[in-house]
Length: 358
Image 1 (cartoon, rainbow, N blue to C red):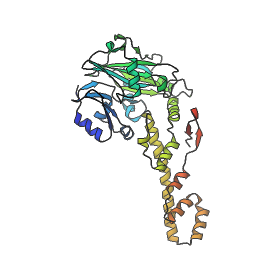
Image 2 (image 1 turned 30 degrees about the vertical axis):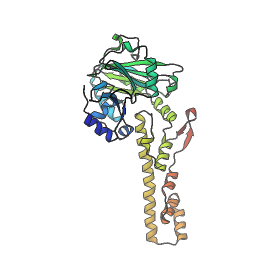
Image 3 (image 1 turned 180 degrees about the vertical axis):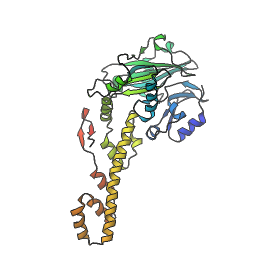
Image 4 (image 1 turned 45 degrees about the vertical axis):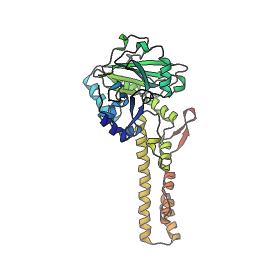
């Protein structure tokens, strides 16, 4: 299986795909960027780049999962709903809260990576755990694992558990997936979930208020289409633990920080929250700015002395007065508007801040 390197290079040049070269082999790993997620620049090429590894001729060496979405987000909702309503057969497995590890052979040599790097701490940890299992890695197949160990905790508490759980085994050339229970090799296999009656029951389960130390589930339909189904409470806790909340978005807007570039190691689904929070805060800013500019125009027409301007503003438009005074004096006024719309803040889980959504 070959990938068009010209198209891939174009996405890399556009900032939609990140590339890392293997330290010793003529291989490179490609992972969609945060810019791609934030701007939803999904196309045939970027969807493939969830950690795909190619040689210098564009031949696939590690055939990772293509990008798949949450069942309720725009990019996943249509595909999920169509299959749900059509009664397409599906299987459900646990969604584990760890790091993706990818393993395959290249000219006989075992190659191991995380979803975006050959040299990350997760890739090094997986290399250590797999050192006695190379004989179980068959040529022509890509093995995909979930890595869990204490130093790599994200939200869920697995205690002292260290494990590599096999999620899928894909034909490197085609993406065909083998039945895991029939594989040779002493691998821990992701558990199948069979205690829900229908997808609607899972949807209701995700709304539970009480945290049960689970991230959610992966639904794989018979045609290979996958979606993630995550607990609402997991999303809430991830926002707290990662510090991604409305207050954080407000600070980035106030300080002129590139929000997209500042977000590291958060679930793709949180980008939706960030975009909505950004739009909400920017809209509030724009309303105040527009009102202040209208008042400034009125004052210019009235042509009042400064004392009378102050009296008029403070008696009728106290909220906008400080901003209008800055405008009258031709001073910067943005900070005053941002201060007016600063989200309230309270202490959350593990001492992390949590914004109150008014």
